[in-house]
Picture 1 (cartoon, rainbow, N blue to C red):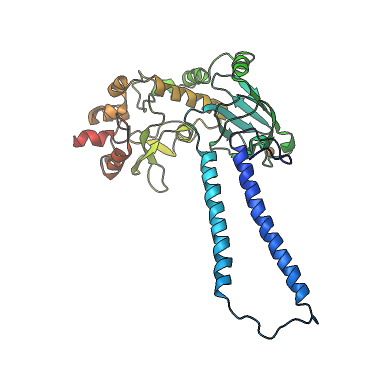
Picture 2 (tube, rainbow, N blue to C red):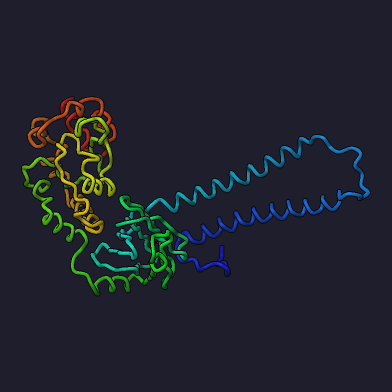
Length: 379
Ligand code: CUA
């Protein structure tokens, strides 16, 4: 569909599709509204009181009309449903090669950080033609990241991560708004998205306030806050190894009312951004199975920005890892005795049914961290 003159310009890869859907639904609504109003007007005029028309044999029932006025709208709304759902999946499914930018909303500004470490406030620079994914959270209340020219809007929620991806298709400056009422200065919380030629973007990245990559800053935090004391590669303390954990299945015991921590059934989850974030700020919510719940919370000790940096560092540990090293020192290759030595205890419930479930779920050549003990004991 070409540019619609009465709409804002379309500056992302999904904008035209979203406009087409909007126009499509509007056309259907308008056509039916007009048809119904014309019929109302015509019938009320024709059968007004005193008009000389034949009223002798009013129709009682008409199968054909019943079928048509049920069937046609059904087909139309199901068509809209399929159309909109297909588009929805396109909008929410983040491409694997998207460049990740971290976004933190707070009263009343946007803080954005590029993978290379460059920071900016209220302005987002991105290269044209390349998929970008924003991983977003809030320091305080709910905000909403809204770029009308991209036709995209996503709530930014404290304690949660939300993502928004887009491929900018045009260079230029576009409006950025906060679209959720978030306090006194909500209306000022905004800025712009500046879409640049890739070469300009590369140049821009090296200018200004950039010294280190996000994961390098994360590594410093990792040391400064003492994480390395327990999670470091050479640590003898009872904490899970973090190398290679990102994106893999892990066995966890989820806190449950009335059950002592560390005694609930183990279950498997993927160690994604959400999981690692919560492991840092809400460590008692999900405890790595087989480990004592001794991790202190870093809530209020780290800002969301710093948590992002730590996650970026932990993520970087995954890519550096080669499978051989993983085999040697990661917990998924430990014998039950080693595991017990490192973790301090071996809850029975990990050996039971839950571990079996972990075994099925943990894919990949090295299996997951999840099932390891069971794999070993049954082998
Ligand atoms: Cu932030 Cu409105």
